[in-house]
View 1: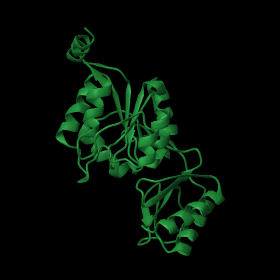
View 2: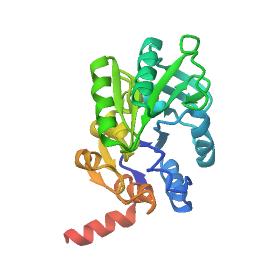
View 3: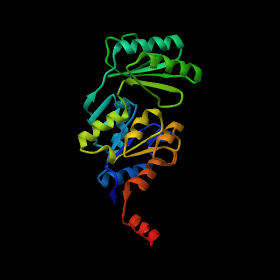
View 4: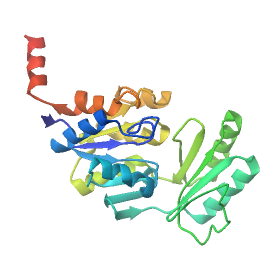
Length: 259
């Protein structure tokens, strides 16, 4: 088999992982076929490295990776290439908003994930990567969004319809993928980016082929070039089979159709 694209950038939750948080055997099989065909497979996730790395190890990936929605780019597993930090003053403002609205919140520092349960108030003493809110109250979430937009200096997305995720302005999965492309000598036109949420939107819009999962948010589906099966139906395996790998059998079938 030969590959039509050189880099496959995969979101994790709701994309690579099914709802049980596992990579199915069929998806593992097709990812290995892609790697064997010379495709760079890159994790592109909102997760921190410590929770993403076990899956990279399961797949045997040695490629660069994008973590925390682009706030970190890793040259290889356990080898940090670039980190974009958030102004602690902005973290303080976002914490104040969480208190004002009484919603669940979390924040990724370089070393730890802090949330409503373990927050100790030491904002200035840490390096911050991302802040997030979660609430099922649509009106509160909308008001939070408006206040965040007024603050400026923020990249605002989500990883589910119930949350908001905030990175430094200009830091997103697309910016991370561009850095990975430079490391690998790949063009954005040679990238397939797959995801399901708004934090995947920039990558899906800018990649050579932008793919939305069948379970993706509607906005993501509308902006994608194609929609694949859901994360519970081996959508990643389908992407690799249909859009990335082409073999002699596929070429023969195509000839039969045109004859």
